[in-house]
Picture 1 (cartoon, rainbow, N blue to C red):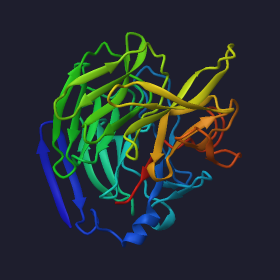
Picture 2 (tube, rainbow, N blue to C red):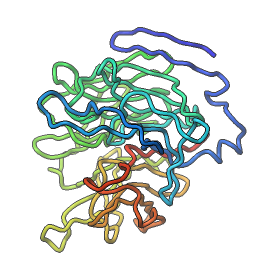
Picture 3 (cartoon, rainbow, N blue to C red):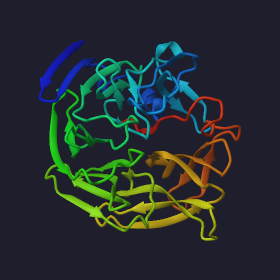
Length: 365
């Protein structure tokens, strides 16, 4: 085991790296078996911890269930990773809104968390095999009233770094990278504080073209932004919110980004409907694929792609509780699987464990 401690500007890394683990744990057959859908969800325990999801003057937030790394079945069953089957409590208070990413090659699950002792956001990396902590890196972000709002996270598989975005102490939005082995934060670009934060850390990364793609509020609408990680060049796809795409996930099989769209039903009134659409990372043009019958609501930006199955996972609602885990075809938006109708997680205000705060698909390589 090698313990690495690094100080660099805004960052600090205190991690334990196991050489046999990073990129080499288990046989090829075992790694394929362990691949699949993962996320952060409540451990099967009554334990809770005080929530830091509020500031002075805000309404109090109830204690939150202790969160752990979970393997997620298509049926919606959550199986804790590590701890002899009971799971391992994750460090700090994990941010919601899919602020997570997976390093497929090294079997590391990264997530953004609030450090309870320092009240600062951190990037934490844990083993997909055991849920043990591998890295911890302080981030140069100022936390919003609700943890994770206005923050974004993706893993650059071709560069071996985690890309993150958030607001600094001046209010500027900043984009940068963290190298897991050193903990060094590298600033890429800043953009105006006038751009509004979006609830739901909807972001993805496009290898080869080195594009970090995410959403932010511009001029009263939610727009898609791309940043070239190597040059800092930014592009803004402004369509005044007409695309209404609420998740962004890159599909390495065809080089397109896919997401779930939520918009008013063509029938008018107060009804909404969900659909699947693709987004070309070069033109940033959104193209519809198909509607998802009966579904009218999506849980805050939580989605991921299974490239081998040409499908997208997300959490949705049919208009009444509870929420369900849904898998749709990227070809025609048809439903491939749904979690048990008794519910993947309850709707807000309904008793029961909360929805997973992230979903990421692990493709062992």
